Image (cartoon, rainbow, N blue to C red; front, side, top):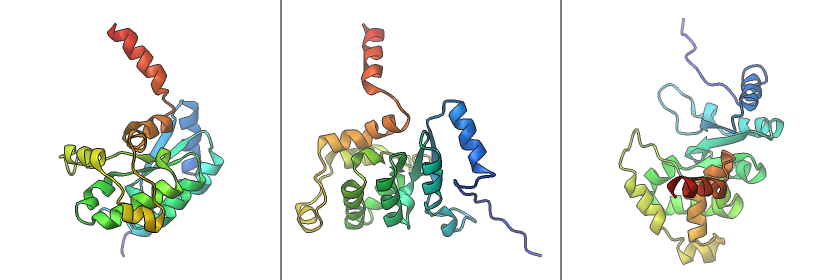
Length: 192
C-alpha cells in the first residue's frame, strides 16, 4: 500500500495553523514566511499555491505573511493577493536567479508587481544557500532599469532609487515592524 508522503499544510488551517499564529502574536512575532511555488522533492506544486494566505491574513491582520519565489507558477495570483492585503509581502529569491535566464519574463513579473502591489510589498531575498554568489543579484538590482518599451506598452513604473531602497530593505523593515529611523538614531548614538 502506498504511503501518503505529503507534508503540506495550509496557512488558513484553523486547527493546525491558527494556534501557531495566535502564539506568534503573543510572543511578539511580527512576520511569518512561506515557501510558495517551485516544489522541491515530493512537494506538489498545487500545495504551494498562495491562496491559503488570504484568509489567514484577513483573520490575523496584526501578523505579516511573506511568500517566497513570487508564488511561481502562481505569479498572477501572488501579485493579486499581495495587492489586496496590507500584511502580505512578496519575497523575491527565485526572481533574481531566473532573470539571468529569462530577463524579459522577469521584467514583466517585476513590472506587474510594482504596478499592482507596489514596491513596499517587494522584499529582496536570495537562495544564497543554493546559489551563494549573491553579489551578482545585488549588482543586478542596483543597476536595473525598467525598459521604456515596457513602461510605455504596459504602464510599468520606473525603477527608481526609492524603489530599490524599498526592495533592498525598507519593505522587510516594514514587514517586521522595524522603525529604520529609530534604528539609525540608536546606531549613531552607539557609534558616537
